[in-house]
Amino acid sequence: MKSFKQKLALLFILLVTATAWTQQKPADQKPQYQPPRLTDPNAWTMVVVPDTQMYTYFRWNHGILTMMTSWIYENRNTLKIQNVLQVGDIVEKNAVDSYKDPRPVNSEGMWKAVSQSFGVLDGAVPYILVQGNHDLGIHSAENRNSRFNDFFPVERNPSINHLVECGENSFGKKTLENSAYEFKTPNGWNLLIIALTFAPTDQNLEWAKEVAQRPQYKDHFGILLTHSYMSSHNGKNARIRGEGYTLNKQGGNAGQAIWEKLVFPADNIRLVICGHISAADNWRGCVGFAKDKNQAGKVVSQMLFDTQALGGGFGGNGGDGWLRLLEFQPDKKTVKARTFSPFFASSPSTRHLAWNTDPINQFEFNIDEP
Image 1 (cartoon, rainbow, N blue to C red):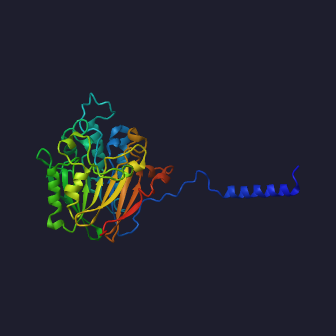
Image 2: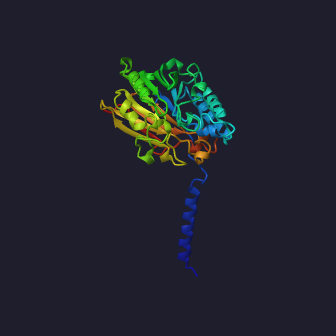
Image 3: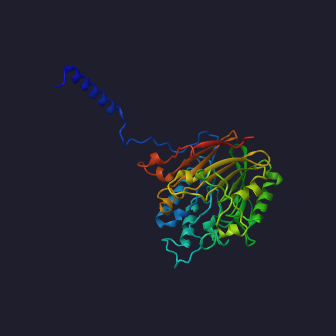
């Protein structure tokens, strides 16, 4: 039988436990959601859209991509969105015989779906897309035929007022497959964005190099947008040295060669953005970031963003709607990278998941380092 002191001690323990329990937050209480906003009213935003191929894979994923572009449209003024860059693999299959294609959506449907989704931005927000290996050939980059120009011709592109010129594709036609753009953004930023197709040829790289070296772009902040360039954090952010695609074996350049022939010699290309590398439900396999100095001793930031395999792997929902928001600060030195999902933000029950604040997804980098 317990003594009076033992009973008193037990009662004290129960009271302390009960008090602590009542002070705990309910188990289902979620962090308060904060919608995206500029951290500085004089900053502006560039939006990076990952590989969209898995959003075209199944018909029921099409709406997620449209939700993403619609969110960009609705927030274009709030975030001062100047442009949208998509990193390639626009569709899952460029041109597959519909009688042999087992997928719920044939290639025609895939191109129409992504065209309609980006059509939300037509006339409102400039966007630039590049070809990935899935956008070429019949199966995946065994030749350079593509339906890209059928759905994204020069005259349709809302970046037309920013278009500097088009380079020739492999058939001697000037299309947006290789193209250059100039932007004059808030607070005096002058941008030169060069977009190159998957496995660019030496001719493509020579054209891009000539554009970058023109005197009128000497003091511009140059950005290279291409599909395949570097690996993820899981791959130690290394530039890709070789790939098994037929085009690479027929003279197409992989990431390391793109660096050596174009980025390293170009004094004004200071940022490279790419996609292509992803991993099933593994963030470190979907994003990457590295810095290297070019021949002028200036730091070049290099960024991979390809979230297509999140949200159920490569057969999932297309990538959970993730976008990379790059906020360029008025000091012309600092860029704040944030990772946001309009898909999760669309519902009060999932808004607490709309931001990924891990260090690999929320960070700052200096683009004016010596």
